[in-house]
Length: 217
Image (cartoon, rainbow, N blue to C red):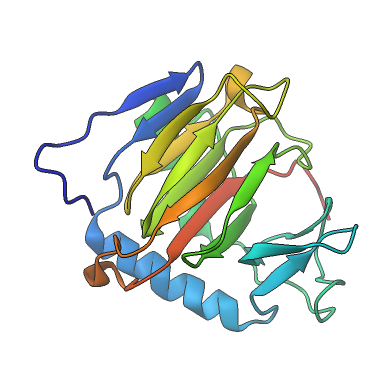
């Protein structure tokens, strides 16, 4: 949802990186929130990921299809409870393909097989990082629901400048592929109080990223 007086325009932030405001209708946002709440209860519950050095991520994460832990994928959540993660539903594949058609005009056979679902409370942040555990170079599809945030999208060489700060609001789509696929990106700030309860999120930000792992088994 956007409270802006005038519609926000889609933008190519860098080659292959496309921001489409208000792509998800409210009804679809509510459906996604309900699905994510179900996955958050298990079989692998949502958790704060512990990094190899002992640090704890401020976002809470639950995975579908493949379980991500720093810095690999597995079918079972060996760092949580050892359970096998929930299966990746066909309707998420279709959602990802629709997102690529919206961003690029075609989906090219895109078949995401994992979703990383991050919940940000008002204090959560995400440092600059690359999504590079996947063996596939297919685009990443990112969907936002709830509170708006500042999304920092950079370059593939360094965590520093040049980068562009984009405000992502509830319902927004952001796709990055091609030469931007391995660009550093992060969330330096969430904007509390910007969520519209009609989406099912009265506070906090839900971010769903769809990816092709390129893995088998």
